[in-house]
Image 1 (cartoon, rainbow, N blue to C red):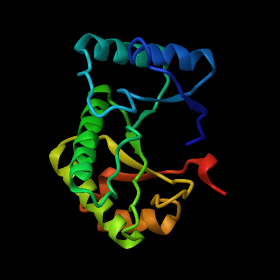
Image 2: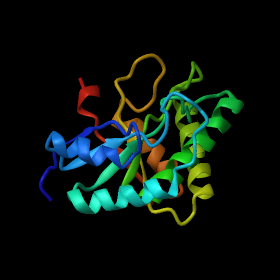
Image 3: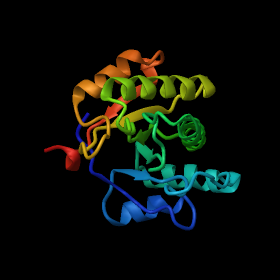
Length: 184
């Protein structure tokens, strides 16, 4: 498969509008947010908007497409309340992506919050397992994004991502997103 050129495009006014925006700048593939990336709660996707999305996908020929998960999700967190919220938010992201037929949901793995990389990686893997178990039958992949490595973030080394994948019980639903602007 030849490399595809794409971009993150706005879904303001309805996710289906992303295709026109992508097409206007020559995208062959697109990434969107399916919900507000800075809020825990989300409005359900409107069924008519889902229909428009599929029609626009067929009309433009742009494919594949992915979404980026909320920036609030932290599967590496030692705080149980935040960890549970993060799992629930990822479940929502995966369900929304499945309704739209997305290839995957790009996810920042999270931060260990001074608990150490090993502990954080184990929390990420356990959180992924919980989210995948809650979305059985969903084909959408979780795409762990390589990170820049600031603070206590996880995923800035391939070894982190490999360890997360090794501990995950649904490896077929887990892949890596190589974010070139995070690589030094």
